[in-house]
Image (cartoon, rainbow, N blue to C red; front, side):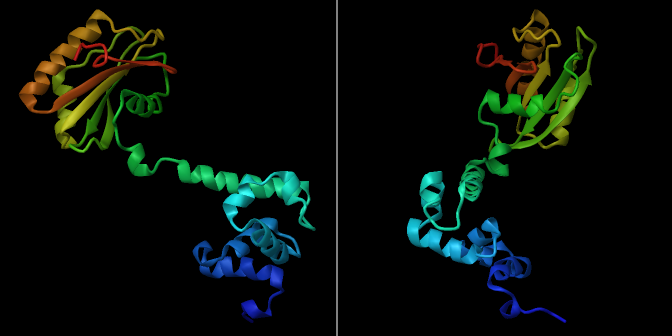
Length: 223
């Protein structure tokens, strides 16, 4: 037999409505009552809103202020503050679109660093970017030894053309942990710069990365 919301005890109704309707249709009081999770949760949630008016005021309240409401102890007050603080922090997180936009060398560095599973070998990457600075893809085009990795312009721009890229950033790691560009790094950067002019695909930057640091050859004036 199907149980209707009106047949449920008051404390169980918000949870049942959440399961049936989803969270968007629940009021602040109902959502608070689910977090509280006690037999008197609806009454406590109502009293919270009556006294503090908004969820933001509840988040900013001290434990001592919250515990002035009968039925709310230090543990429950702490849980309420923590839940509301997490909600605020979640809203401050970058969107997926923002994560996929490359505006600075540091943004690219973070993306590249997550791609490297073995920092003891040299990896060479091509980051393909569209005309609006959105990251299309990151492709590893070469994996070298502990000391060197050879990259030909053909390999780099083959990937860029395949991805319909308007511009690229190249990047590789130094197993030594040193981010200063070597003579070979500078030579291959200049070689790829020349090739980019011929191909009509702009080379925006060349990053040298380690596990915790990076260097931008554009910022160093090499590009």
